[in-house]
Length: 217
Image 1 (cartoon, rainbow, N blue to C red):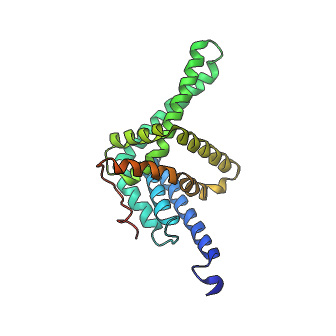
Image 2: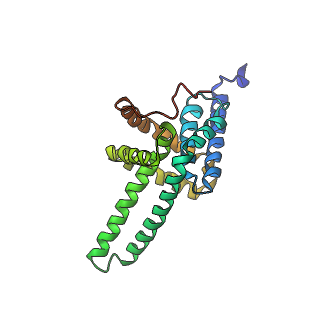
Image 3: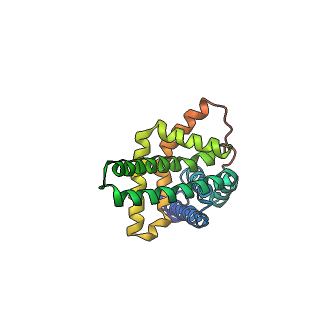
């Protein structure tokens, strides 16, 4: 009763905050091997959207995260390796472009192309975690879906990217925010992401990996 009643808004907020920290911690730890970054993003997205901000209790956070993580491992590890390789190549290309773009027009176009490719890749990466958490499909199909969603709603992708940069800068200034920012960022983008995926689901027969009715516990 009173302050310690579970339905008390203060208690509910504290529980939600704790769940955000738990799922963000899982995400950070599971990202460390690098080849599991995308399965970790799938676990983060599913646990955040289906448990932390939907149910408001912590009973299913751990199970939701690691169930989605496990189911996303097969295509997710392959895609993570590909993303890691592409990220290194694009980074090296942009560094080269920044050092040479003033020399002639070719290098200026080279740098511009590097930034464009980086934008397309990061935009698709933002959608890869959600796609892995929702669909049972191979790596190629998942990758195509991520590019489809990011390209179909380009202005939304730009907004998500700007928000990601803002979150990154916040963590740079206050590193402890890393225990909140992953779950918070996921919650901020999930409305538009879910809308895109639901529209696609209604118009296709692609099997979902995690139905909302299947894994509420």
